[in-house]
Length: 343
Image (cartoon, rainbow, N blue to C red):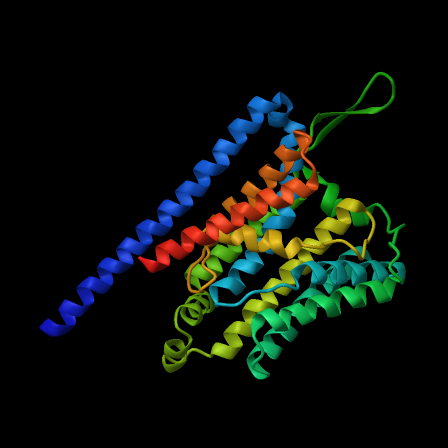
């Protein structure tokens, strides 16, 4: 390496180390914020730290987390996906209709997830082939998917889907139940909810994909500098389509979990869910400019939103005020990211 190359490489490496420290500091700040919220809400209401409430937070956060993971993949490419809430509803609707038509639950859920992935592929194709901005393309899919869900069901819920359908959303691992003297079952240990286990598995797989697989490296490269990635041999269009397909598939999976919890398919579910997903990713350190973001940070962001909603609910705060609070948190997170990019 020449002296000029060495001289230019040193500041680049130094900037990379500084940026890495900055991102780590933001993640630690988010973690401290999460712990502070837990402490504050536990002082306000002793029941906040109960096992049952902890399981409620896990169940609520599992939906936000699954959507947030997919959103992170898209945001890292420099895009956005406003359709995940509607895709969630459409995937659940397809699954419910298939079960009503006689298809077993597991294949019906698989086709529901596939429906979400197909919506994501459609988003990716519109963005890459028609050269439409991600905001407009996914906004269109948001309207299309919601309209299809309402049209297919007549805006009515689909019920009587059987006990098996509710197993994914309401089952738990290591649950201990015994029969009481009155003849009714008594829960000794509620177990670990299946949605929480599913979220953990998906988060680990997504983190492995981003950090250890070629597709993950390409996702970061496209978000950092699309032109440079293309000149380096990265298939930019295919990478974007894959990211949106994964986001849609995870939205479909979140739909399976949510509808299973309700044991009823609701075509109106998932409204504004995309905002929670974006908030989780941004609070966790993902940059809306692209090229920056990780799954661990998104999980912290998802739990911040879950704990915040749960604690405010227990405090009797209205859902409207909750939206205001979370909106302010998102604005603050984006502002911090902008300050870091200016430096």
